[in-house]
Amino acid sequence: MDTTIQLVKMATERSPEEIVPFLPDVFQKRIRQDAMDADPANPKRVFHMGSWAGTTDEDPFVKETRTFNEGALIWKSFFERENMKTVIVFSGAGLSADSGIPTFRDSGGLWENHNVEDVAEHEAWFRDKELVLRFYEQRFNGYKDCKPHLGHEALARLEQKFKVVHITQNIDDLLEQAGCSDVRHLHGRIRSKKCEWHKDITTLDGDRKFVCDFKAEMIEPVKLGELCPKCGGQMRPDVVWFNEAVGNLNYDEMKDWCKEVKYNDGIFICAGTSVQVYPAGYMVSFFSQVKNKFIVDRKPQKIADYELIEGNASETLPVLVDRLMS
Ligand code: BJW
Picture 1 (cartoon, protein in one colour):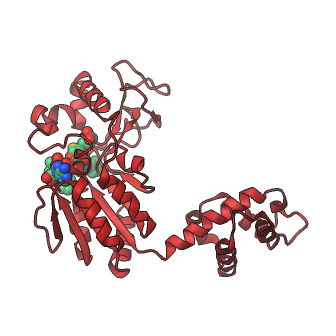
Picture 2 (cartoon, rainbow, N blue to C red; picture 1 turned 45 degrees about the vertical axis):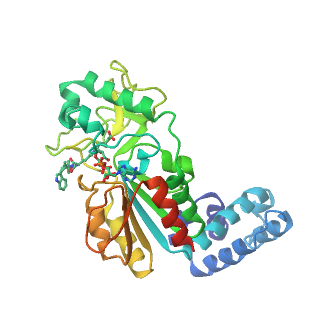
Picture 3 (cartoon, rainbow, N blue to C red; picture 1 turned 90 degrees about the horizontal axis):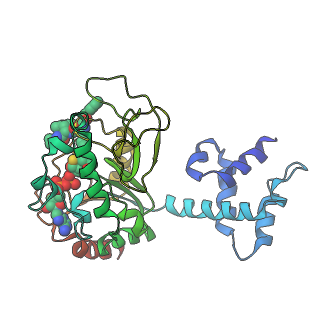
């Protein structure tokens, strides 16, 4: 297929982020113009948009008007996002507390009734799988009916004005439920399960047994005896325990975000974490070079020159978000 056609076809089918690096300037300019002009109510215009790509007889868009229209709208939002300032929200258990999910280290928190080393350490799994699975069954059932609160909803509202990236230590999906579109889970997700020999698991002793690639959505809590359909290992929750590497923390990406936030007058919000667990905790010192930065917590601790906002996330976040949006 002609390279031009191929590129434009890609532009309708893949995300802009994926293909921008391959697009020559002249193409970007044209797509930008057409995307800005795209009108969902006027397919004729879309047909016209397709026709500029038709440098050969084989114009793919004559048959794909709808796809191209959808593609154009995705590009439109991409270009609009490009001009937005970035907000990075780093969160922990305190963000979900007002939705009824207990934190770890507060009084009444999870670690008051459980020894961390019995249920959330890599070695604990091999000592007593049943105990660990029972702990996560309770957690799964506790999360099942929880709903986002006004703080989560406020964070979702930020996307009307900013490019927002959530980096959360939480394993619940309350941010997604509230409508947040870019959520990275550093410590895994309660609604996912994986094989105990999954290749994502990296331990300090460099054990080479972790080679399987089976993961699935968790509809019911994992039970002892539920085996991996690929290798026969015991299934486990897809979370990160102590002494397992936090594979989802990409330092290069973090450096890029930090630069962008710092030089583009962006914002960093740290919400509801005691900052006691690493490497996640490094985020707070990493972003301390940023000018607009906040710690939102029921008991915020003084770190560098962060502005401290004290109180429950469901009450303080809506106020902070209104302030940032105005
Ligand atoms: C409210 C509120 C309301 C309440 N409104 N606010 C230095 C560097 C690197 C590593 C280490 C290091 N030092 C030690 C380590 C090792 C270790 C570690 O951090 N240990 C610490 C105890 C010191 N880290 C690890 O082992 C990590 N892996 C690793 O380092 O690997 C190295 C490696 C490299 C190469 C090969 C192999 C290995 C893994 C850490 C995994 C953490 N896992 C858990 C469980 C996840 C699954 C699950 O959820 O069950 O993650 S433990 C737990 O702690 C969970 C949380 O995400 C995490 C953080 O807790 P969080 O969110 O901060 O909660 P709390 O309870 O502490 O705080 C709540 C806050 O909310 C408080 O401030 C309240 O005031 C506030 N609050 N109500 C607003 N309504």
